[in-house]
Amino acid sequence: KQGYKKETRFTSKSSAKEILEKIEQAAKPLGFDVQKKNYRMRLENSKTGRKGNLKVATEVFQVAPCLHLVEVKKAKGDTLEFHKFYKKLSTSLEDVVWKTEEDMQ
Image 1: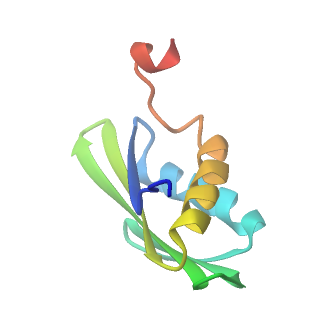
Image 2 (image 1 turned 120 degrees about the vertical axis):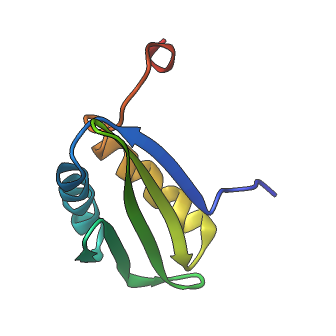
């Protein structure tokens, strides 16, 4: 059995507003309803999966004036479905995820 994480994090040099907009733009075509409040976002899949509807909680933390930490975690549903969702989401967020020179090699 392969172990999948129930949460993941990434850093970004984009503004919190821009990060949340990008996540919303990426999640809606995947069938997710989006609820935003301040720097938090709840995503709920309208399709029922193996363990009910997948719910994802997202929160943006400011680490430094130009650096944000984004936490994306499964709130409810199947961990494998969350992993598949995050893979699709992360390809849409490539322009906001901050990569170091080491990551680019």
